[in-house]
Length: 398
Ligand code: AMP
Image 1 (tube, helix red, strand yellow):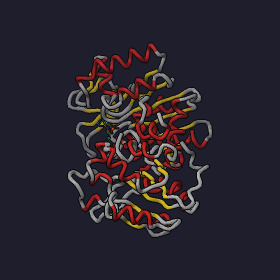
Image 2 (cartoon, rainbow, N blue to C red):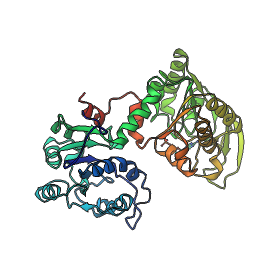
Image 3 (spheres, protein in one colour):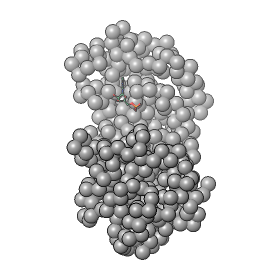
Image 4 (cartoon, helix red, strand yellow):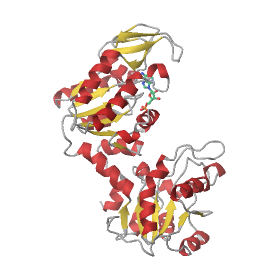
């Protein structure tokens, strides 16, 4: 495995797996370019060295072959604008014509391949298809953390064709380093703030985090499954009845591992799931029928913020309430702002990751004010769960 900083790409065709799976509007314009920006340092390094950048990505979930709305050509304009140069667009990602386009690139030029998932062989991890892609490059660079948990042709299988010439891009290096700061040798106290809708999607991560976290703060809809498991009255709040035993198991594990698992004591309840609902604050275990908990309450906010301020390493995944509605966004906003405060004070390392917490941190314009925002939702969660990610293992040769 090579190191990107020590590699000179001059004259080389660098085949870079990026994650350009970005949202587009109905005019096929990019509405959030975060993922494109995240890939720029690696592309710029290749270009600056005098290398040739051949970029490959998926976009959306095309079902059966090419679909206009998922064409990577819609990304080329934005990418060129951000790089200040023109980007050539290939009509496919494999085949003679594309191979010729890659071979004809001059030093410093960029070729964007068509959507990898227009070929079902990509997600199937097909070795022949991976070999066809591999013909386009002299060096393989994986910079797509967002798909590192998938064993696809372009993210993992392809690495076999580059036994010597494979490396992580800057984004991958950053993600591995920053998530690693929580998992290995983190400064204590370590606090994980876990929220979101369902406990079922976060069980393994909570269990794995118990090995490293001193405190786990549980917010969001998932908290009510814990409260219900302890025979509390949760009214019409979100609950996963088939996960009550699991919730009890998690609380038991917390005791055994000496982890403070902290649940909300009060809740902002609403009489309907709507911005114009009537609201009241209730103890989390005494929510009347006909009412549902949609945010953490003021006493919980106070106690959560105190724990956060006293922590040295903090991971945040999942909102504290239905933050998309103004009325139920206070808990999420306060957590976001406090993370920014402790980061500014220089006392703590703060890592934010997972779709909706990233959306929340962006909503309050705080992405630059925390230590690191992970670009990989599912990949970050699986990494924190302690799983080996195929995209990482393939480069490391594990
Ligand atoms: P997840 O994708 O599991 O992280 O869940 C994120 C979603 O959970 C967001 O869309 C929130 O609106 C939703 N959510 C958070 N708290 C609650 C709650 N108390 N009741 C219902 N939905 C919630």
